[in-house]
Image (cartoon, rainbow, N blue to C red; front, side, top):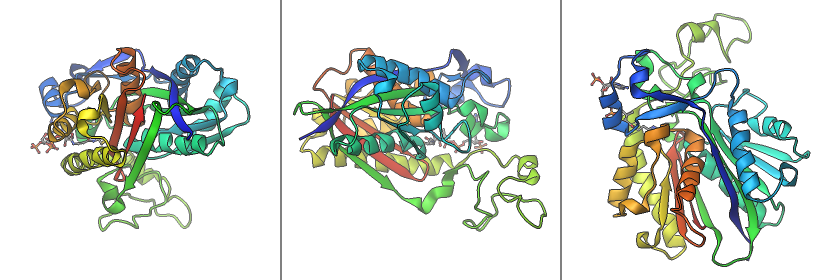
Length: 349
Ligand SMILES: CC(C)(COP(=O)(O)OP(=O)(O)OC[C@H]1O[C@@H](n2cnc3c(N)ncnc32)[C@H](O)[C@@H]1OP(=O)(O)O)[C@@H](O)C(=O)NCCC(=O)NCCS
């Protein structure tokens, strides 16, 4: 049976390192608070004008494509996951297709936030398994630094997030000891507003009892983005951190166990678990709950913060570059985030 394997992987993080202490310039916070609650020591911020979500994705993609031993012209489909796109529309997929001078192939954007990369990987996996495509580029990239609230008001969210990109090339394999064994996708929109950026959007306060946006008094239009929304700073993400935390520590273990049991494995069989890098405390909780050893869980949030759709491919790439993942190893990827959506993928590397 044909499965898909990761034939090449790459990552890119911007040069600018921003430490916790650097953030003190903008908001009332502390290195101690951030490290204690999240494990984060520093993160990267993209160059304000020279780097975008797409350009970082391109840098990661170049490495993944080269490592797969192919050229950009060999790619026959793009899946690009991000919540911080260059444009509201069109998506980053077509911008990457243009920047990398690829053929007139399909380009799909995925908007599943922290689970974005796993949703993208799962979509690509299906196209490979059906035989429709042979070389699919899957990218996760974020330029959070452009859209965060750097005043004290936004500190609970802003200190967590960082910029970066990761990419993989998926190819078919018939080797029984390699490839993606299964992927598992879930959602529960009941708490959609708990971690969300409402504006710009067409919601018109339809979904909540308390208005989440203020609109100008106008006969027509001005509901997507208004002067009032900007004046009242309603253009930033909102998060109830504790609610996210509580749900994440239930759903992470659940979706990891789902991937293992479907394939007849136990936690002892995992060589490396790459959890989405949301918060070191969440990853540690999951590790404890599943009784995994330190060497079975890979974390690098300390250096990069939460890079949302990019966090799994960045961590997977670093783990592989450090020699922690070898051919045939059982690797589990798992994510939870805004939506809520959560997902896992189990593979033999
Ligand atoms: C965000 C998170 C770190 C906050 O930690 P917490 O222990 O829940 O903290 P709280 O939100 O209850 O806030 C506690 C206090 O710290 C303050 N605080 C919030 N952010 C702060 C910051 N960056 N620096 C200093 N103090 C901060 C709050 O104002 C609050 O003060 P108060 O007690 O005087 O009201 C934590 O909830 C979390 O990580 N949740 C998961 C979020 C996540 O993973 N999101 C990504 C989605 S995948």
